[in-house]
Length: 460
Image 1 (cartoon, rainbow, N blue to C red):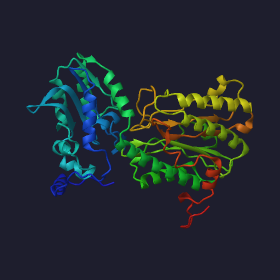
Image 2: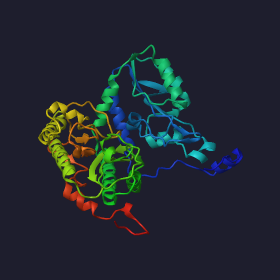
Image 3: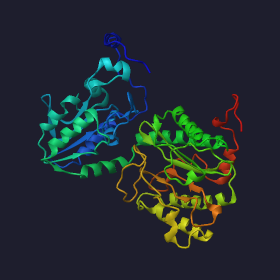
Image 4: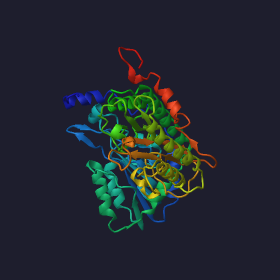
């Protein structure tokens, strides 16, 4: 990491003409963001104001920070990826610099001395040109412009977490200002439902996220072998994400082997993978802000044992039936209902449980959630609608010490795919590309993968 130079040298460098640049050409257009803002404002009550504040930059340790990620609601309406930004929407109008507008975006001012170290900021002028918001001003004007408004109701669309720095200042200014204004939670719910319906541009990004995730799963299946550490598989997966353009993981990669296959959100990934271990691998990439969520479960040695195969078959049957139950107009929990019956019947048949009530000991989570800008995305959990994306992810987790035959212990199986709802049959976006059947998985695991390189050669 480079130590700071004299400030005078910084100024000399920045005067060379650093400019904001966009390196991608497949992001959502500014016109789509503008249409979203217009549609959302049309739902706001007369006399109301909606305020969105993005996330702060979070410190990791000492003088290093975590990679910045915008607040999802804010990002959905603006496309702005800079920290310390905010948006005010007012259907009845806001006066900004003598001009009447309905939307005003607040961004950081240009900081030439700082930009040499941390990257180029848009500044208000470039942000207005790039993002096409009616008015863009310095974030130092947030409190004064907000304070000039006297609405009948207001909404802060999702309070950012871990408030610090400029974001804390803006949220505090909102809190002070809004004490005498009626708080209306409905705009947040309305925007959440809007987010659940994906546009063609959003679906294109979802497909890219899913393609990267599918390739990562394939390489992990091909590479896994006893003696590896869980982190070797996790790092391979995340390399494939990055290789295919993902800026980040959609969530912490879960590579749980043996006893860890029964821990739903296991992220330590430090255990050695042993010959008899079963793995539950839940990983997903994030491409231009859009997440995927896919899980596959498989034996470390590439061959399912009789017990592993028996549990796997129940989960696979439940998942396939769950996907078939997903279509526009069906209740959100349709997949969950059919999956739970199949899992309960299967566990009763094996003698692992006696009644369906006991199933929650081995299948303790929901079968579906929305996917989008967040991996657990927003929505109303009402009847399914075309162009929503959800997961279908039944599972069975028989941890050590469970009240059943020991032969079932430490088998944790989840099969999860990212599914697009349509007016007819659902499209299993990841399942159409990534094997789920045991013969197909065993065949893939017999092939060499990127993680098996030794002395420059690929091979198991």
